Length: 57
Length: 188
Image 1 (tube, rainbow over the protein chains, first blue to last red):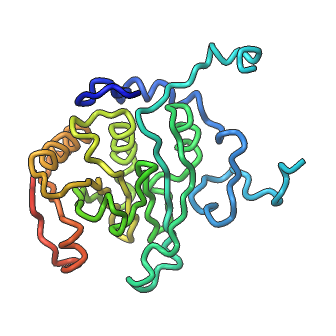
Image 2: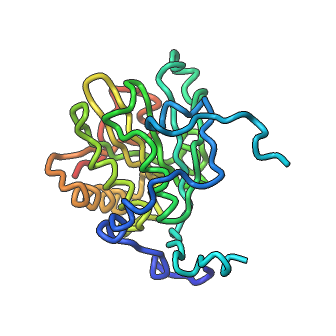
């Protein structure tokens, strides 16, 4: 977006609007792998670091 | 092509900026000199949908281990004082008792990524520091000397959190020089 202005062109979303999506997106983004160095941040049930190179063809 | 998968029906909602979650585990933090050495980027998101996909699978402050810092920063900015964008910045901070900051952490993130601040372009990101007796959320900003913008951000943040106690703004410069003795430059 190359328009100038004090946030006139900003994509604004209210809290209520954003919260409507909360329950619809519960799976991790596709192709995202949780490696062991960041595993501590993720809740139980998230698969940690599958073998490296899994997606190589 | 995307059309063949019916992607049109589930069109994602793009955010104004991309944001990156970062994490610094308490375990390897020993000396101030090593601060930031254990900082890891977790994931960069740029849509409402991606935000929830991540947020719904990571711990909220109340279930994070003591010592952990969890950041959500504009993806162009590293959550470090040394980052050129942060160098002249500062932060507003709200303190909570342990286990009490989850809702305010979420509301802080939603206000930030939803561009609810009038001076959103002055915001670098947010961090929650989980400690033994408290959880501390800070909002990092770019130009600490821009008092009117900083005060506006602080006031709006309190409104979004429905927080009634006075909060203070500390310059990163002062924090670096005086550590815990750094004084608030602004309060709202």
